[in-house]
Image (cartoon, rainbow, N blue to C red; front, side):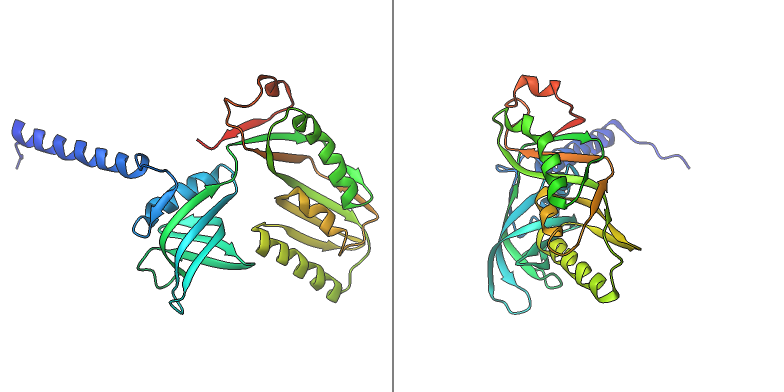
Length: 262
């Protein structure tokens, strides 16, 4: 049996599709402020958050709502690490928390209002050859030398991340020493939203992952390095300037990529 569709039916279907498309476009793109959401817009908020995070920008959120466990008011700034469905996953006061909408009960926070605050407008990405040193401070200083030309451009550097592996000649750590170091690394991960991995070997250890460059000197406090050799290091400089505001000659530098927020 063949179903005949008349001109009127086709026009109705097209009208529905056009209206639906317009609503979706308005929902996703035409809010008055891209980063302000109420508690009924969690799916949109999570979608925008996911887009920001996927580009590598640090993301914070001012969250206004209540603790679902006690009903007490919540008003704080959360470091957002992940977004899925209608839920944000973040770190607040060194603890992991989840944020849902106004009617949330499974998440830690039921949000009445959320203001997303991505850090920076552009990320300058480049790679440097392996670095060698006798302490993590040595390694940081040598990486900082590669950043100095960018600082001389008078751009506003908000944060610097690095990604790579650090092979450390040290000592064979006892089980309790290993656990102590793991605890310290876990503290960094929990408080800063990092994902640093540590592996213990005879006569040393390996530390790897993407992290803030400021972490490096902290490692000298709980390891005993004699010699350190890195892999190639990818450097991510988060700056306040938009792509149009960056100096034209920045492209003459050893840049792998320029990532923009919008």
